[in-house]
Structure formats: structure tokens, C-alpha cells
Length: 291
Image 1: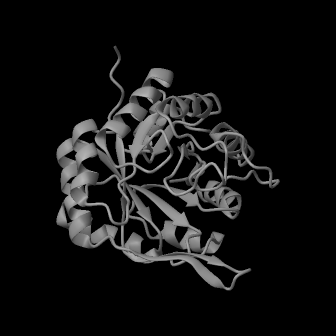
Image 2: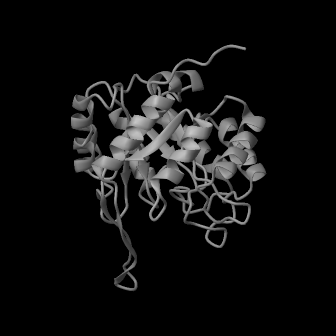
């Protein structure tokens, strides 16, 4: 990737952990997802990452909830957004996470590229307030890749550390992973790569040649990482899963506020926001079929 390439602006619309006590704008119902999708498209987003929720806000891995949310988004914005489903979870079976891929066949599905300690640390309390092992062994990664290959779903490789980036090449050599790759660097999770521009550059330097890459910055360092990625030629993800706040510390009123700021930063960096068709090409997806 280079500075001449347009930047794909992605939105992670809700996540699965945060709730409205923390941010009132997080969508719960399918209609709310649809309304957020409209705001995302209106502000220049072209790719949306989905964690399903039930209407009461609890996380869901059921086919019917992914279907209802996807249908609400499509009813609102048609094919103006590339649909990406999360497959990451702790304590949820692979069978359940594969079921909604097989049934609904999204354009893209996220795939975590390695195991790690996954934690949240409180400096005020001097302790971990969340601390778990996020297991993503190679056997599971390969099973997901084989299913995605069969279903025609493009993997989005989420890499939380440099070693996760290094895990891509053996899978390409095996033939289970087929270039061009779509890789995102998740930075800011305790247990993964610290969120610095230098660490981002190191991860970008290690992606297989010809890959499309972007950054997913968690919490307040997000905007610094967006700037760094745009300068290095990458794409960007923002959204209420990752960070609730605008650069001035104001809480976003919707995903649209976050996408509008990302769009502004793309332009200010001398880059051009990708259209949905350009994004499909950069991510290695087939062109849309005219109807």
C-alpha cells in the first residue's frame, strides 16, 4: 500500500462488551443498527464490522440475530456498505460461530490470528479489572479459513501483536490462505502490541507483499494511530466498539460522528476516502453485480 491508495474507512458499529451505561449511542435493536448504518454511509464509511446483539443489548451468536441486523442494514443502505461479521469470542463454540457464516455468507469475516493474554488494567486501582486468555490456536484458524474459502467469504486477519502478523506467511505457504490479504492491526489491548506509531510501522513492514492493511486503535490512542496509519499508507477503523470519544474528549453521539472525524483526517492527510467499489477491490472482493 502507498499514500496514493485511497483509504478504506471502516466502522465497528457496536462491539459486544460495552453497554449504554457507558455510551448511550450503542445500537441494540436491528432498527438501531440500520439507523447507524445510514449515518456511517452519509459520513463516508464503506465497510462495517458487526457483532450481533439481542434487542436487550446482550451479545448474541445466533443466526437469527445476525440475519435481522444484516437485513435492517441492507434495507437502509442497500449495498453501500461491505458487511463484515465478527467471529471472535471467548466461551462460544466454533460450531456456533461457523453457523452464521454458513447461513448468511457475509462479504468479510474477521479472524483473530493468534492466542494472547487479553486484559484491561486500571492505573487508578493498580490491578487488572479484566484478565483472560484469548485462545485462537492454529487448528481453529485453519478450520475457519477452510470454511471461508468454501463459502467465498474474505477473511479479515486481526493481528494484536507482531507474532500474529508472522502467522500469516505459513498459512499462505500451506495454500489455506490465498492472497491478496486483508490485514488489520488491533492496538491498545493490554497483552497485545502497545499503541505506538513505531509499533504500527513494524507490523505494517511484516505483512506479506501486496496485502491491504489498516489499523484498529482501542480507546483514546485511536486518533493518533489513525494519523499514523494514514501517513504510512494504511486504512482505518473507528466506531463505538473501539472508542466512544472524539479527539477533543467529547463523547460521540453516534458512529456517524466518529466516521465524520475519520473522513476529515483522511482528507487532511492528503489521502482520498475509498468508494465502496474501490474498497471492494482493495479488500480483494469481487466487484458488485449491476442489477
